[in-house]
Structures are given as C-alpha cells and as structure tokens.
Image (tube, rainbow, N blue to C red; front, side, top):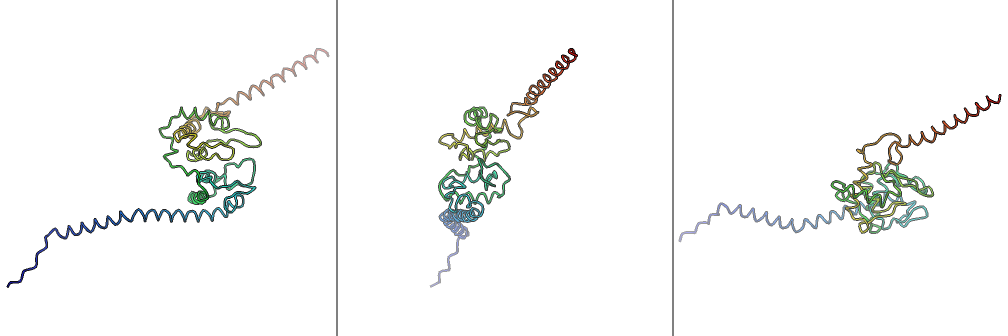
Length: 269
C-alpha cells in the first residue's frame, strides 16, 4: 500500500496561530496588568511616605512631635490631611522661623517633590483633605459675580473686599491674596489655616470655591487694572486726597493762625 503523504498546512494556519497567541497574551495582560499597576502605585506611595517621614523628622518634629501628635510649640497634625501640608509648606509658612501670633508667608525651602512626600507622610497619620486637582480649583468658566457675593459674605470681613488683607486682634492679620495661586486659595478654604475658618465641601461646594477664586483673580490678579496712586484697600488713589485734607488743610489753618497772630501783634505795637 502506498503511504499517505503528509497533509499540507493551509497557508493561513500560521496567521491563525499567531493571532491566537496574541489574544492569549492580551488576555493575560488584561488579567494581571491592573494588579501590577496597583502594586506599583502602592509601592510608590510607601516610598513617598518613607521619604516624607525622614523630611518630617528633620524639619517638623521639633514642634509637632515625632509622630505628629503635637507639642506645646505646635499643634497636632493627625487628620489635617495632605492639603494642609501642601498649603503651609508650599507657601513657605512652614517650617516656621519662630513662634508668634501668626506665621507669615515667606520663601519656600522645599521643592514640590519634597512637599508631596511630606504631605504623603502627614496624610498617613490620619484621614484629612487631599490636595485638590487642577479641575477643582481652575477658575475657567466660573461665575465671577457669584464669587463676589460669596467673598463679600464670607471673606471680606477679614481680607478686605478686594482681598488685600487687613489687621485682626492681638497681632494677628488676614494676609493679602495678591499673587496667591488658585490651588493654595482652594486649600486654604478647605483646611482653614491659622485664624481662618475652614469651608469644606459640605459647607461650601466645589463650584462656589471656584467662583470665589475667579472673583479674587478678577479684582486682585496680575491682569487687574490699577487706578494708580497709593490705593487704600482697593478704593483707588484716595490716600492722596486724604493726605491733602488732613495735612494740607491743617497747614493752611496753621498759617492762618500765624498770620492772625502776627497781625494782632503788629496792631498792638
């Protein structure tokens, strides 16, 4: 009997095998990639917390305690959240140079990566407000008019109606909002730093915060038109007029009194 010749493979068989292999590989990737990504994110977060803990031990623990529990020189950081750290350290207020009624804004000594690491460590001590995303604080498309109403109702009593700041009691003050980034304004409303009350989303929704940020940028931003002169709390060049009334009129009265006195003395002589 004649031996049966080996069957020829179909020309498309190799292509089918390749497609099946790719599909199997894709299925495996879909099954394991999310887990790998989650594990990588968790590892990165753990590294950030570890690095933040080292930075905290050097720059913060002397006032806030080795575990963030607080001391007589600084409050507890348990539960303040990452947003509070990003605001305080990102505006240079922390680490503080010296204790006082209020810690002023100064030059930032940490870069953003180090600030993120400090924030990650403090956030690990207890749940608190997270650092907002750009979508949350970007004022594009916000209602400036509504923001003005909200600002005058909630903020103007301390910050002045254009956000130029003002004096408070016992050496405290409301800082100017000029050149403050939208992110830091949002974080301040979230966390209530120092003498400021906090406005969480349950009290002031995200949209209203964005409206306020848009108003501040409109009246006190880099592109805001200035009326010139030594403006008094955003009212325009009224301080020159006030100077003229007080000192100019006072000088005129003094001259008039002097002339009258000289005239009376001349008549007597």
